Image (cartoon, rainbow, N blue to C red; front, top):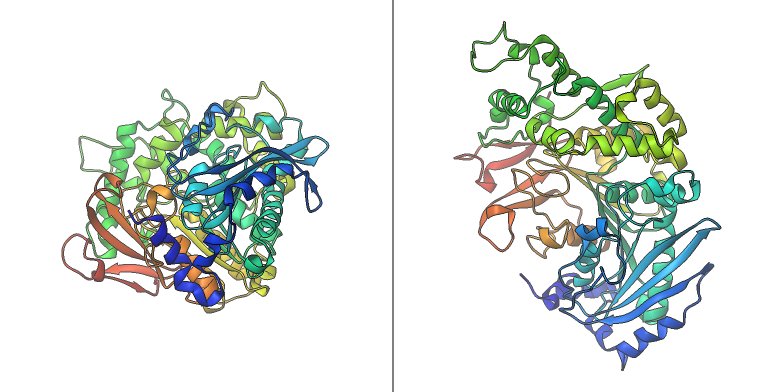
Amino acid sequence: MHSIFLKFLALCGLFSSKGHGLAVTHQFLDFQSHCNSLSNLTAVGDYEVTVLRSEYVAAGSTLNLTAEGRNVTCATWDAPAYSASACRLVLQVPTSNASSIKMEVWLPEEWSGRFLSTGNGGFAGCIQYTDIAYATSYSFATVGTDNGHSGQSIGAAYHQPEIMEDFVGRALYTGVVIGKDVTKQFYGPDQSHDMKSYYLGCSTGGRQGWKAVQTYPELFDGVSVGAPAIDFVGQLQWLGYVLQTLGTNTSETWLTDNDWKEVHEEVLDRCDKLDGAADGIVEEIRRCHPDPSDWLCDNTTDSAWCLAPAQVEAVRKIFTPFVINGTVFHAGAAHGNEARLMQAILYGGLAIPWITEWMRYIVKEDLSWNWPQWNEADALESLRQNPFNVQTYDGDISAFRNRGGKVLHWHGEADEYISVTNSDRYYDIVAGTLNASTTELDEFYRYFRVSGLGHCSGGPGSNMLGQTLAHAAGDDAENNILTRIVEWVELGKAPETIRATKFVDDDITKETLYARKHCRYPKTNLYSGVGNGTNEDGWNCVDYKA
């Protein structure tokens, strides 16, 4: 693992022409005293603030967030340690008479002149300290919020529209505006006059990044969004649709975990080699169109496994678009990921709590509502409500384009929670809305599909691309999407591909198995090398042909 100093050079020294240099390290005779002085803040710009904590965090330190009262459901995002010394400022900020956010601003002692906002995950009531640790290790002044409530449940927004507004986008906006102001005041005008602002987030964090691009285009110069939960209502209602389609383990439509593994093997048998490599990964889902009727017990020669007609129809429905009265709620799941998909949303228990919470607390406002009650009328009502445009699916991002912003959008093709087809569809919506060619979109918006990558991380393929603290295969732009977006914004070097690495046991401390460059959409990856696809130079990005 590279040291914090080398990371600082990667983002600061390489771009010294921008005016950001190591001299920032020694701006204050006493950095800790300067940090402690922030405890006197009562307002930042137009916002009243209450300082909950202002403290110096030395490199190598850990935080006892449990003792600080961090919600137990947020422990997933606790950082193991902080590799950069920084000033930590914790604020409580009212956003209305009935709502407030808790936010943190981290101000590194070695500052690169850059600002970054982190996002959230799930129903988004947790500050992601892992991402704060990641960004500060690259010398970004970094902000994170709890999105207006504590913990992973959306129940806090029950009969509380102000909290819902925070969740959708106001918390992000408030945190960034305050975070930028604090950063500029802390480091002073000489160091912050040319400050560049960035965003990094995945899943719900991906949706938040797109919310900024669509609604608050002035916030960021560069945005890196992964597996975004855009078409938010559609994603949730699709979970209800899947549950209704499959039923329970006594339904004739039900498939067991073993059935889904068999379906996956059948799909690989038909689609794995379409990209030129037999590696257990479907590189191009647009070419993968197996017919589930081939697996009917009357049609197959496989006497050990087959599906009944009702099961075949259930599979077909899940992998084709979910449409009600002409309205597309979901583009359908992507093939090549069948077993992992169902293991996550069905047997792993994602679908039931997500659709239940959304319908119970937000749409129906009825604590007795339960998922077996779901029907298509509920889906239509949920879309009609679309509180504060949580859909986040607007195609007009011209304001962000016109001010020179850049978007690096990525999505794993083996995503077990949010299908890559959702991102494909959004790219096409943007192109259509702006009446823009691929070449025109490439000027400011580039989208990359990463084969074998799961939801934000993990998966059977190359899956480490610098998306989080634990997934940084390297510090250089070739191997790291964080430095990649900086390079694009500040040096004008747009990414042609993004490179992801596969490690033994998906552990960056272990041996590298292989790396693969992934193409910008709508191009596709084809293999002409030897072996099973691990020869990196054997892959080539070519124009997609159906």
